[in-house]
Structure formats: structure tokens, C-alpha cells
Length: 502
Image (cartoon, rainbow, N blue to C red; front, side):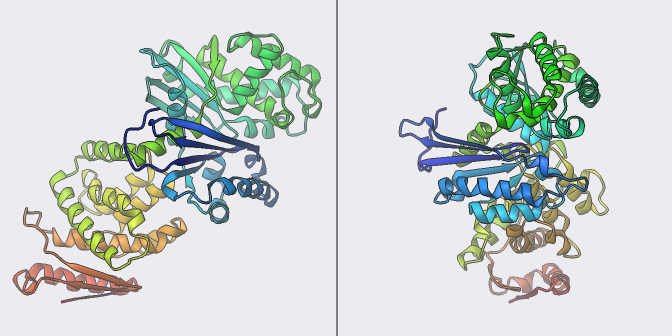
């Protein structure tokens, strides 16, 4: 991979907090502009296996995870946040105690953790796989069977075209059908059938004929590939015939803890039956004859995406541009508000407003999209906008980032909704409210929607006190803005903030 930008960190790292295994990859950015992998770590944590019926991660599973992260932390602790990406997947998407887990994990790693949506996971998986392949003109199907979800992507070159994430994986399937440690013909048939039913509504979009090559990645598919190769059932990738031979061998040996197969590692035994059931369903439902196996997956995708961000090729910028177009946002007004927000933010940061500097990009994107809900309705458009940003498939954004964007849009007018920020990840709670105050002030200053520039305002935050200083005489000439500011004093006062201006 070529890097052309200067002033990049020498070392970058990515961590994938999967439902079955945690992976870390560390790379060096060479002077020649190449990305060289210098370290890989993997531990079978089985976080998804610790989920109970109430979607709570057990203390035992958490302890396994934290012990793994202590090891990872030794490698990345001295790296700046801008050089590290850490992403949680399906288990952290569904766990009710995910927020507490993430806070403890962040304290160990000393870096922020993102929880990404299924389709964002699929995008990163494709990015990782595609960078490890020779560029071709044809379309390819990429399949990643994780612990709790399976991702399907059709792409061309390094660009994904269609993405989907389904709730079926090696850990969830194994727990449901083989939790007693026995592999029977009846249980295997039921496991395959359930995965086929999950995939069936999406089969038409991903079936053979819509792509020229099928590629599998992740621990499950790599493990199955290793077994069928070592047993001599398939010498090139994975075939459906070799999968059936593996199925028959598992049923014949019956007990998961007593499996003896060439290429099967000890820590893969508890979840191999569930993973095989999912892969059998994928082959049968999508009419796959043969699948190649890639060594690269989401962790490499995280790394490439990280390098894109720090070289100013951030996919999130493209996502914002697409949403502006799709939702008919008034671009001129959005740019006016955004320019003022950025000036206010810079002024606030001059006076050491803690946390604002790190989240400037998110404040900018929220400013560009603050009127996105107008295409739904003029009444309560901020609520419609927040709903869109909460639930949309926004490439490049983590769930926490989308939640912050939604909170900013929801609270940017009328009542200042502090409750919208209380459910955000810890670093966003207080900083998010300060960001929102800047956005509210910028919107207020551009209420007339004209080309007239906003005044040069000095702004200072002192805990809950906000002090604004306008150019002398400016408010005397703008009585409507003065009236809006007086109303804003009341809104912020009810939220516990004190706004003063002169």
C-alpha cells in the first residue's frame, strides 16, 4: 500500500474485538511510503460465548477479554489516538452491558473503542480483503463468518457495491445447536436450516451469477480451509464436496472436545460445528461451487481505513457529501453555519476548552447535516434529522459517532435536550453539550439565511458558564439576533448553563 502524505506516525495499529477472537495488527509506515506489518497478535476470547439469555456478557468472559487487552495494551500504549483504531463487532453491538465493558476496556488500552454497525463491519472486511488481492475487473463476493454475525459483500476492485450483515455466526450457532458438546446429524441439519432461513431473504442479491469469484475470510473459514487441505479433501480453496466430507467426519466423531482432524486447533474445536453449519448454508443457498480463502479481513481493513483518515482520504467525508445530496440539504446554508461553527470552535479552543479540539470533525459534519430532516417535514425537522442519523447506514462512522451526530442535530434548536447526551460514550457527554452550544449559536446567527457574514465573536467556556463578546455596537444594529440570544439564555438556563454576552 502506498502512502504519499507526509508527517504520518511511524507506527499504526488496529484491533478487532470479535465475538470469538480478538486480533491486533501493528504496522510501520516506511520512508518509501509502504505499510509493513511488524506484529500480529490473536487470542481466542469467546466474548460472544459469554452472552447470557438477557444479553449480558458474563464476568468470566469479560475477565478473559481484559487479560487479552492487557497484553495488547503493552504494544499500543505509547501510540497517539490518531495512530490506533479499535473496533467492537456483534457481541458489543447486542450486549446490554457493552457500555460498561467498553469503559473498562478503554481504561486498559488507554485508547477509544468504536462499536461499529454490521454493514460498516462488512465495508471494512471488504477493504481488508481487497487490498490483499490483485486488482481485477470482475466482481467478487466476500464472506466473513464471525462469532455472532456473518457479513456478505459484493465488490469490484477496492470498492464495495452491496453489503449485508446477518445474525448468524460460529459462536451463536454452536451455542444453539451443539452446546452439549455433541455433534449429531439432526443437530447439524437444524443448524444448517436455521442459517439458510436467515440468509434466504438476501440470497437473490448475493447468489452466483452476480459475481465472478467467491472469497472467504476470518477464523472460521480459514480453519475450515486448513482442515480440508490437510485432510486432502480439497487442494484449492474450499469446495461444497469438501464441506460435506468435513460434516460427515464431525458427525462420526460426535464429541467436540474429542475431535481429531488434521489442521484443527484446540481452541477452534468448541465452535467448528457451528461455523461449518453456517458455511454449508452459505454454499448451498448462494450456489457457490468453490471459494478461495483470504488471510486478510477486518483488522487489515481497519488499518487501511486508519491510514486513509490520517492522509485526509476519510470515507466519512464522502458519506457526508452523499447525504447532503440524497436529502436535498441547502448546501449554502449548511456551509454558512459550518464556517461559523468552526470559527467559534477555534475561539473556544484558544481558551483551553477541554475536549473540543479532538471532536472538531464531528462538529463540522453535524453542522453540515443539521437540516437533514427538512426533507421529511418542516415541523420538528430536528427530530426527523436525529432519527435519520441514528438509524442510517453511514459508511465510516461508528455507532457512537452516529449517536453524537444525532444528539447534536436533535438539540440544535428549541429546547436544549441534555438527556440526548447522557447515553453517549463517556468522552462525548460533556464535550457533546459544548459542541451543541456552538452549533446552536451558529444557527441563531444565520437565522436570516443570507450571505451576510457572522460577526467575529469571542467565546469562552468556564465549566457551565459561556461568555460571548460581540464587536462593539453590532448587537445594537441586529435587534432580531439580540432577541434570539435572550431566548437562548432561557433555553440554556433550563439545561444548567449560564449564557452571558456583551
